[in-house]
Image 1 (cartoon, rainbow, N blue to C red):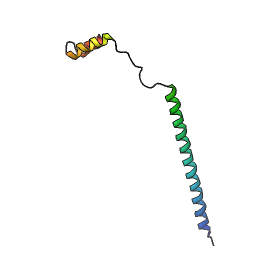
Image 2: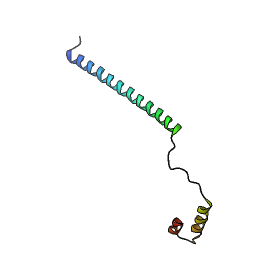
Image 3: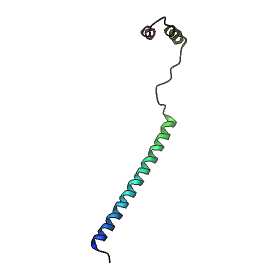
Image 4: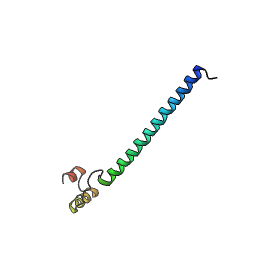
Amino acid sequence: MIREGDLGKLLEDQFLSMLAYVAAQERLKNKQRQSEGIEVAKAGVKFGRPKQEITPDFVRVYDKWKSGVIKAVEAMEE
């Protein structure tokens, strides 16, 4: 014989299990959508600053700075 309190507890457990299942499914869907979005972004978007070409002028100024002929501020001005 099932008492009224036991039935309430059973229904409560079933309801909480259903809510947990729905939450888990939602997390899986969100994770899948996120990974799909990352793949799309990687295919068409470049991240970070654009690459700059190192010019002979830069190398000349860098060598002067590295050897101590000029200071860093002077190198930046050049």
